Length: 307
Image (cartoon, rainbow, N blue to C red):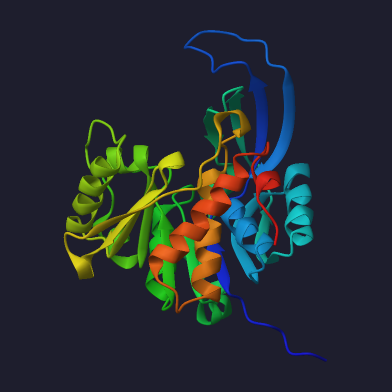
């Protein structure tokens, strides 16, 4: 029998079912709109990022919680079909699988409401249960859709390269969370909230925010800027912040931006695990390319490219 290959990318985080309504534009407060299409999909930032890495060829594993309901059973089958190791994805009696209500406009913009359900039960004990994965994986990926104390425990126990995608954003971000992550990655709106900046719309504004996050305790910061690409810098090179451009995607080809950030994180983790000798700038450029491909297709995981 051939030896079992070790895990390259370990994701500790959320799994959520998406309910997606496509509509000409996003509704205003109190407004009801007629949509023109509805679909369900598999989401949650943790599972999304895991599937994104798996589709690129990484050997992946997910530590997550689902409800003991039809949605949870369907999700487990979906993860297996994507080649993700689900030994530590648990269905919990008395809990519902997390859900997200997503509206997507014809212009590709979206807004999202999340009910986390079973995801709230991910705990520090789950780190101990998955100890073998934490010892063997090359890259750990975490987000903030599950309890922060469990995430902190995961980061404390992992000795490889760790990525924290701090989403949804926390206004008062734990200094330990910043310090424990090898790479702290947020988008422009999340960075603005964490650094108490009115808004971040330009590369220069992103560089200023990245500097603030470094001063708050982060080791390496990446701020994603959608079609503008990303800005990054590290505490080891204080004051030096670089911009990586994203491939140009014509506006008429942008179908759905939902999940583009997760495609970026999954691709970043995959490249860090597979090509550790490459520069971070190269990893970010590759991740921007994957995210740019994902916005040209509808859905979340369904839009992630395969190798």
